[in-house]
Length: 624
Image 1 (cartoon, rainbow, N blue to C red):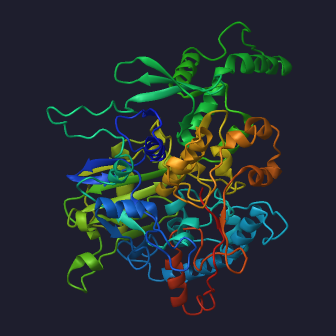
Image 2 (image 1 turned 180 degrees about the vertical axis):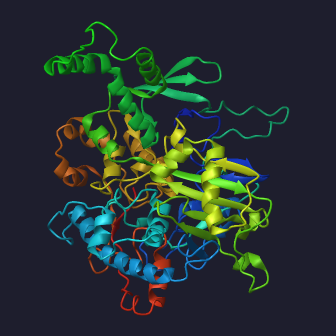
């Protein structure tokens, strides 16, 4: 979406461009598939934080993805993460829900509310503003923050609660995600309401097509006698294999045409790179492999000689066993390379922004054997949407989404189970039969009468060479501005994509904002800003190339001084609050289920008392 957004903005400014797409279709990780006669979404599926929030400094506009959904007329269902949940574990026995889960959930909510203050303190300190604490404490993981607030999971149910609240959204365990980069900007700006796209006509890709409709080729043929449209700037099936960014006065891009096997070269004054961090990280690996013979061979030879091994490899012979060296060469040829390699300041922040592994597994059954609430007649509004399994192995086939409660999937008998992290990565390398065997082992502990699925579909984003993961995340030790550093251009090569979004990384609207922001700055370098309306009119989009020699400056940066550097060179503006303090909106807890937490906490007698907290204006940086 970031690339299509950038292309649309360039088209509006009457700038000649090419949109190079490695796949056979646009949309990136917005991709649908046919399953059991229905359309499912392999990637982006939810509109997170839809609608305006009264009192927010951004209350004058919606989440732009939500606006696009309404404009295109897509169908959807509102997700009920609170009341539509049932949990099972081995201790309670097959078919018996865990009845006391709300007690432990209440303790978890208490720890989360406590942790909010830890997140706020560290986030404010990271911003280094006059209203925030002067000290700059080091970042800590969400696990450490939860532990400081009294939450120490010790049962399968505890870990299932934790997975449902964090891993289900961030796709990483609390040990990996930090406190300063994980606060819920999205849900503090807009309503804490999520909508699951179920559209069966066009699918979620319609929002991407809507963004790019001004330049994308139309399907109907032109009538006879009407002048044909200009050639399309879109190049499908064109895998970028090399980017030369030190070319005098521009950028050169090498492309492999997967349709005919030809290699083409395109040159331009500027280029915008919207690769996922997974692809960019693989390019770092390619740079290392390229230097393997010149760097690794002498060091390995020296190691053998230093430790007097009985066998020392031939200095002029193969460094690796027969066949492995060819595999390395093949991997280099299949991976994007930069010439020269990316500078250290770019690769350092890139290494701290891994792709999350998030796997969706759909299973179609002959009949619905899972729990039905029969007390209210019509089962659809009363049935539970989320069925949670609390296993001894944390995150082992933990959340099953019941598609029978969704309007467009009613009576289809489809369950979707979600995996994340290493479990997701491992599953995506398994055969469908192996996944079925393991998944059914869990399902039959929940429902003894579970039948075998008649059809299965597995998303495998971690194995897709165009992405190597589902979406970007930030590890402990990173901050909101880490995305800004990744976005900074190298000469005329600009970077964009959801990973560059300071506060909306991992979200579809983060990709939309990133494409808009990066292109606005590029247009400023071209002197074209007056022709294109900005998404945020009050923000000064200044050409970074005219302000400073960024590459030379960042080569000498100190890691402890990143925020000072970001403040000096970035043009982002803030939406200030009335009382001049840093703060979160009520319920801003780092995930999209904040409202549910506060409601449940207030219901738990003896646990939820005193958890309600007053609403503050949230001082945030515009995601620009």
